[in-house]
Image (cartoon, rainbow, N blue to C red):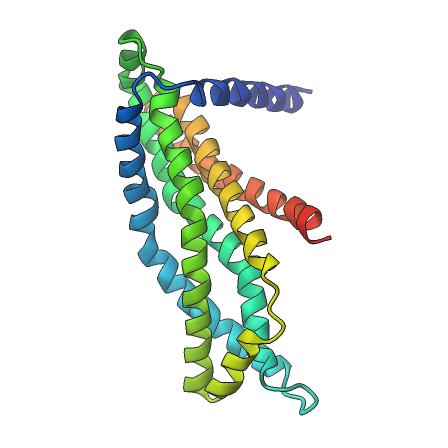
Length: 250
């Protein structure tokens, strides 16, 4: 019963926190500047790691698909088609979200946790500032806005990595790969992956912010909360991915 009681306690506290986060801001200009800073910190600074991983994911999918379609009954362009659909439907949105849950999720939890234990959050409250909204809302808006962009970037770079891996290893010709990318394309897949990316962006930042905002104790507790934020956000992303797949593709 105790784990169940703790679960409902966390859910209730999270809902209350989100209610404070999305309260009307006191000074909108101040929030705009914070959002731009968070876009740079959470989004632009993550482009490098997303690009590197996407190149190798695309190349690996191309090589593995070629080894599983060696039969002459399968046309070569199926390799490009498989890379495109795998990146669109699953890898780019979900893998990018899992990467960022480790990269930015731990940073957010550590930042807010450090501010909590050094009483900076209390100082904001004393000054009459809604600390939850001021500290957390810009992070959520930045992630929801920029994670779909990172996902689209990951798709294009992954497709390029797949082409590069296929041409360099000789498993597929450039013409067949490009034809496979264009073959039987379903535009709804882009809408599907962007919806997932935006929701994942909210989950990552909201869970990490919750863990950091309610961190109490010392530096050790902040570190534990950062680890919990990464684990919990990753698990919730995977569960949400399953639910969204059932809702949006069936």
